[in-house]
Structures are given as C-alpha cells and as structure tokens.
Length: 427
Image (tube, rainbow, N blue to C red; front, top):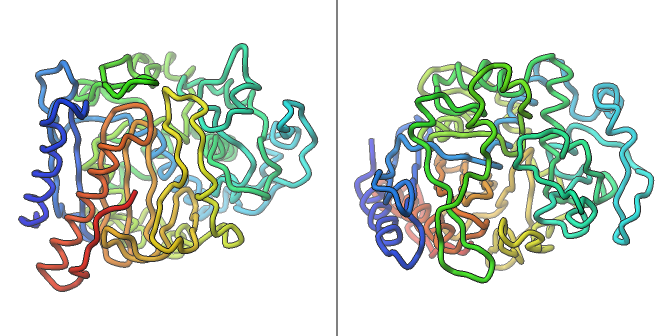
C-alpha cells in the first residue's frame, strides 16, 4: 500500500527537478519498498530524454551499470552455497583463472612488479583484490594508452589486459574485481553469468525485466543517455554508454559479448527493488516465496569485510576521465565521520544515516547516476534512476537523499516505527 505522505513528497521533489530545464535532468524514477515488497512510494518524473516527448514511466528501462554488482555477487554466493565456489580458497581461483596467478601490480612510475599476496573470491567481492577502474585511477588510465581501456565496451579483453593497481589485501579500491568474480563463477559452473542470474535469481523472483541482454519489450522502454561534458554545466543527449548488448539480436552475436558482473545489467527499477526486498527478508521473496539465498548467506554479505580500514571511502576518487565521473572527496559523508564498512559488493553505513536509514544499511550506485539502498534494520529499500553522465550529478544525488528522507519521515510520522527527526540528506 503506497504511503500517501511519502508519495506526495517524492512526486513534488522529483517534479521540481525534472520540470526545471536549467537542471538538465530530463527524467527520474524513484521506487521504495517495504519487507513485503509493497511500494511505499513510486514515481516516474519527466521525459525519457531531453528531446523526447515520451514520458518517463515505471516501465522505463535503465542501464543499471554498477548496480549489476549486487546481482553478480548474489550469483557467486549461490554458487558458494552449492559448494561450487569457496570464498577464501586462492588455489581454486588460480585453477579456474590462471591469469590471476600470473598477474602483476602496476607501480606509480608505470612499471610492473610481482604480486606478493594471494587473491580470493572474497577479496574480489570486497574490492580488496587490487584491481581498479581506468576512469577512477589515473595511473591505470595512462598505462592503457595509447589504446586505452574501456570497461563499458562489453569486451572481456579490456578486463584481461588490466594489471592490479594495489597488492591484494592491502587496500580497498573500486574496480573490475566483480567482473573477475563473474568469470570465476562461469568457469566453475560452465554457466554464463547472465544465464545463471536469470535462472537462479530472476525466474524464482518472477522478474522479466532485469537482464544483461534486454528483451525487445525492454528495448522499447529504454531511457535516453545524457551527458554534461567537462567544463559545461549544460546537459545534452548522447549515444548510449553500453551499446553492444542492445545491438545483439542473435544468440551468435550474444556469445561474443562479455557478461559483465561489474556493469552489464539493464532493469526496470520496480523489478530491481524486488531483489532488494528479498534481501530485506533474509533471502526470501515476499511475493513468490522463493528462497534465493540462505539467511546466513545474506547475513554474511552484510558483514563488514574491511574492519581495519574504517576510513576507506574517505580517500577520495579523482576524475581520471572527467566525461565519466566527477571527483568525489568522500563516498558517503556522515556527521562525526563514523567508521565506514564494506560488505560483499556494497558499502555499509554502519551508523544511522541523516536520511533516517538504520545502522548497517547497504547502498551502492551506477555510473550513470543510479543509487540503491537496502535497510534491513528498518525494513526499507529503494532506488533512484537516471541516465546522465558524469557520475556524481548533484541534482540526482540531491533527489536521492531528499526522496529517501521523505520515505523515512512519512513512515515515522504514520506508524511511529521510525524516527520523526529526519535531517536533510548529506550525500
């Protein structure tokens, strides 16, 4: 049952941004659900594109980019449950991926040195294996040139070409780690990653519009991609960032496309939120009753994997490719700078957040400015979706915080289950 107060606040907030041409945000979709998978608030605001007459709807499909990482990690954890993968067995990783046993570490001077520590599946899922991203790491960007790297080209050759940028286990850095985790899964099981996700996650959840290869129906609902180019605050439509899976029609074409566990997914936000609802319910779908993960597995995913790195997300991220990301001095600022945590594929705000979210809430994002959160303490999850580059768009991030806060505030005032003292979002 939609919460009227939350719905009205979310609608007013989103429409205020998409209705203001100066923001350059053509359209936004926000969805929040409870433990029963019921919508607390859901609103599609604006148009699919700046030059489009098509309205944004709750049926609109988005390239979800790094929101895919949660799905790939859930797939890996299912394989762990089945005994096909082990979280802490580096020998298994090397047997399946001998490339990782031979991989070297890129130094600041551009030279390569030997790897000192072993790589495990847990490290890949926790982003401590040593890999980076070329759009966040200048030395990796420069190392790939004159050819360059492009992880949004759906080509595994870019993944295989990249060296480590840190010694395994010594630092947290966001990168292609979960792309490698997907490769480990494929080689262990003989099943392509998207095929596994469809059979083991989407079908049990009754979801038909979360896929690395969008169906014809999904393509008809695709949102336009937008860009603020470096040096300009104005936005314009641009060619899609992740075109290859959209162009693939035949099975033969699809075979040539990398199943990217790091960025390969497309989805309707309403359906993605049903995945989050299953996590709210200890791995069980509140709508179909399917148990896609054991309760102890979900609990393990929400455990902090980097307790010795309480400030890992305060190291700052440079805009190595300014057309793809804004610089980020901190991933999720919180008053008082409490210790930060990282679970298996997502950040944990270990203390309650300014929006009203509870302790140990998971959240993550996609580079085209999509953000999700999953609050198991208070039984609330949701996401906001746009298709605009570069990452860290202030208008979208502001709406993420404002709409999330509106949900908690409405719930708190309606049933007393949440605090009424919801501060403005600080993201």
